[in-house]
Amino acid sequence: MPHNDRTEQMPQTRFDVLAIGNAIVDVISPCDDAFVAAHGLDKGAMALIDAAEAEALYSAMGPGREISGGSAANTLAGLAGLGARCAFIGKVADDQLGDVFAHDIRAAGIHYAVDPLIGAVPTARCLVHVTPDGQRTMNTFLGASQDLDAGSVDKQLIKDAAIVYLEGYLWDPEAARTAMQEAIVTAREAGRKVAFTLSDVFLLQRFGQDFKAMIEDGAISILFANEGEALTLTGAADLDAAIAQLAPMLPCLVVTRGARGAVAVTGGERFEVPAEPVEKVVDTTGAGDSFAAGFLAGQIAGRPPRDCLTMGAIAAAEIISHYGARPEADLEALMARRFG
Image 1: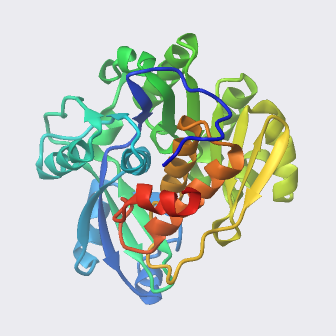
Image 2 (image 1 turned 45 degrees about the horizontal axis):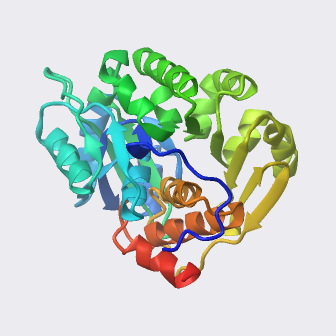
């Protein structure tokens, strides 16, 4: 994909993007609305569950597919598919699912060198229930991913990356939260960009003040949010009011609106693009993750904001057209069709 019409030259680094996040294997299974209701699940949302709940729910699920996931790791998979140089920091256990995750991320060409957890805590898994309308209801057992601590974060990797991308989902465990806070400090001291995704409304209900403080402190270079997250974070009555509140504090704000496209505000200017058309929405798992991949790929290439948004929309459309949160089509070819 040609890199013409650049607006900003990224620094020369070993990696374009280093991501820190939960290392999770998704177990994806189709179901009907009755299954969601019978098990008291909040359709379209993500909930944290313990080991016993995970075992009971897994037993009740129909046949599923095991696919490596995790929000930030999914974003890296999309970025790698677009030719970006990527590295990942996240914790798995020394077990079968841990081996699956490590194999998959390395097979995508992503640098991954975190030692697995040895002990009784298994690798994290997300049980994804997909209804006929393509909505995904996620129940996540975080397992070994919560054991990520500052000792697992290689500061040199952070310094070696142009963008450090952090997922809000990992903010819950105290040790992981501390590790991410230290990573932000290291990135800022090295003059690197910090990208942060808010991940889910339930996190904002618990840690919204933390996220606001980071934004107000100027720690975040690029903030990703969906419409619901932007409204919850700000308490605004509508999206325009939420954007008006957040945008002046951020070099770049990106808000996704599902079928209504996406908005970015950077340099005091607002840009909007529609969603890309898809023949059928099969599974929305990872749509936001993939959008972030496309947008960041545009940033790396120095493309203007509207192009970055369009690249995000194309990547998200590819993901929702099939099961699983990792791309199956040639993303570079999809981008080339649009941009030549």
